[in-house]
Amino acid sequence: MDNYIVSARKYRPSTFQSVVGQKALTITLKNAIQNNKLAHAYLFCGPRGVGKTSCARIFAKTINCLTPTSDGEACNSCESCQAFNEQRSYNIHELDAASNNSVEDIRSLIEQVRIPPAIGKYKVFIIDEVHMLSSAAFNAFLKTLEEPPQHALFILATTEKHKVLPTILSRCQIYDFSRISIADMVEHLQYVAVQEGAVAEPEALNVIARKADGGMRDALSIFDQVISFTNGQITYKAVIDNLNVLDYEYYFRLTEDILAGNVRNALLILNEITQKGFDGQNFITGLASHFRDLLVCKDASTLVLFEVGSSIRDRYIELAKKCSDPLLFQAIKLTNDCDINYRISRNKQLLLELTLIQLCQLNQPEGIVDDDKKKRIIKPLGQNESTQQATPPAKQEIQPTIKTQTVTTQIPVMPPQAKPPITASAKKNARTPVNISIKTKGDQPEIDEVESSQPQVETDKVSAFTEAALIELWHRYAETLEEKIYLKNTMVNNNPALKDDSLYEVTVHNPGQQNELLTNAAEILTFLRDNLNNTRIQMRIRIDETNEKKRAVTALEKYEHLRDINPLIDTLREEFNLRLD
Image 1 (tube, rainbow, N blue to C red):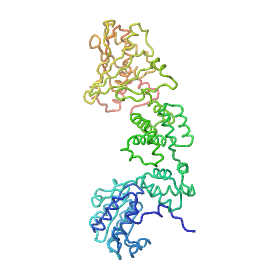
Image 2 (tube, rainbow, N blue to C red; image 1 turned 45 degrees about the horizontal axis):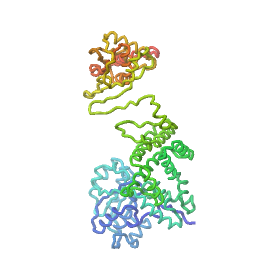
Image 3 (cartoon, rainbow, N blue to C red; image 1 turned 135 degrees about the horizontal axis):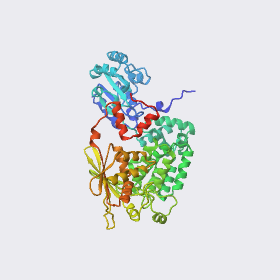
Image 4 (cartoon, rainbow, N blue to C red; image 1 turned 90 degrees about the vertical axis):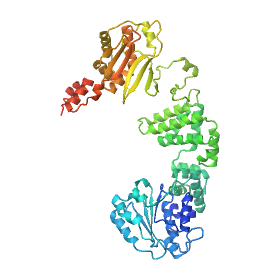
């Protein structure tokens, strides 16, 4: 029985004409040979499996051919070509830099460079994965690479050009190999299938090509795997089963449910996909690519960016007509955000389901909105439009509007968790939103004033009050905070100072305390306005500049600084019997 040879080796290119997907580079190399304008060093770089080493071998064989053809190809019949084809040529030397990357390996190569070729004009040295050479080996190679003997020619190949020293790059002609297009890959796979006596559906070969991600060697390896699975009958269904690829049909069904707003059916499809063992992140990245493909199918000018078979292409074009551009923009953004957050999410299934819920609401009248104006609100499942309009939301969204130097945030005034009874007028004021202005001074943000966003009415109360009364109520409110320990400590350790009849200022030690007061400013103001009988009370918050400039140096100073911020540190130190070193 003959020895089996994998397709990646069996159908490896032997001429420039047979190289797939690198036409511009092969033409350049052939012209250089025909015009006798050969450089002494070349660098072939690009992704794996795109033909770098194959082109280097073809180039080395062609420049040593004794009777090259008129189109710049090797004749494959002279003594030099036959020696190369039978792997007995002494004019071509290959070095794998991944396993021969030391200075001694380079010195041994330099010794061989000095010996002229016995047959042909050039002695060619192909160094594969050259980026794996050590820095010392690179430096030992520099002089020889820059001024080699007239008969020596170097071809360096690498998948990571950025790891090659700039001094090496400057001495080489650089050829960048591109990923092989899906169309070129499918055409070559079809040729290989015919040579192997296999019958292959175009859609099946397209899946193989997409799975190979631009590498012909990977595509041929997958082809061998599939042809063994199918016994020569390569169908689309067999390929997706063997390669564990998610069928296009799932994405089409999901898109129909998204357009119809059918959340429950979309969740059932997701469950069906996960039950078959497909990874959630592969699903969401595939869904993002699916929406991208729909987007490029909406216009004939961008249809060239979509590389699939004709039958699938027609389905995409028809489905794309049902999808608006804003819907596809938002769908791509949502799926991309889900892909980014997938790895850090603790409940990955819930993240996928939430994304599908958001996608199903995109086609609703209020589904697609301008993010600069308001946020999208996810409607409760099973709630009709009339019920939703009649039932107000339990809590208003807090949405910042970013300006040049000022940020204004609207916060609805809501009753705190525990406070004295509120009068009728206070209840009216409790529904009045307040504005919190944050002004930037240097690198530090400064909270300016917290005040009502609505004009004052004649029923407002403007009773006078003293700073002592303000501080007393300030601490009384702090005592009601049983769960918000950080806010309680902030209020206990930072007393308000009355600046005028209705404005008081709170000086805090750090941005954390500043943010805590800012977050709870609405509840604090409501409490003070009710109990001081003054609806015009405003609050200003700032960070103590002297505290920012003071730097704790010793361990004791650091401890005292932390204790000033949070007195509970003393209790912590006593309970755990901690000491300062």
